[in-house]
Image (cartoon, rainbow, N blue to C red; front, side, top):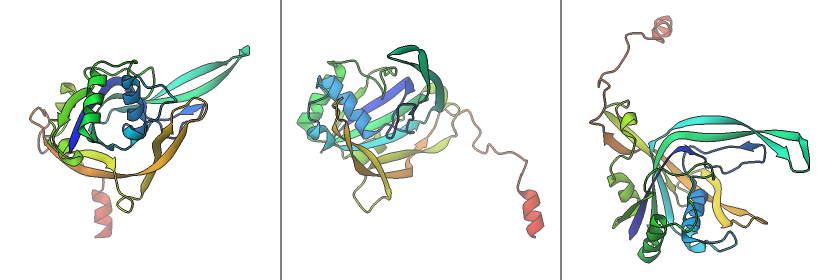
Length: 239
């Protein structure tokens, strides 16, 4: 089995699963539907083209640099009345970096890799205002999804690495079989058609201690603690 690895990084990203017109939210990691949309654009598929082959790929995300949640004040003018406008809320992830894995048929993954290197349509990270920085494809690995996500080097920015502790664990969010996770998200694209967008549910697992990292670039002391104990007085009351 082969796994294609992607590095999704940019000043802004937005990965919504339940957005409405006046409130466009974002998840804390890339969605399967958003990444499939990015790949479909690279392949040159129209919005009405089927994506069943892409949906069938196993999907996982390693959160290498979680980023900061950003809220943008945004107004939209009414198309028929210039004096009428709507205030909308749009949320983004700023300075985030993710390692995405897609496991499946090697022939399809090779086709996707080539398309990402020479995309038919411009690529964006969830919304058109969010272009990626640097090469998106990191290439194929002859490993299963979990192994590929665990073995790949840490993709976080150098300025971010120096701020992190000497040892940390990277969260992994991946497709899960029914019964292995109680979390379900409406994140499987059935159609990207403008006239009838349709999505189905998938189950996901969240592994908070998925990938341990030894951070040699850290400038923080291993024992970076404070002498102040905010709970000391409570413990004294109990005793």
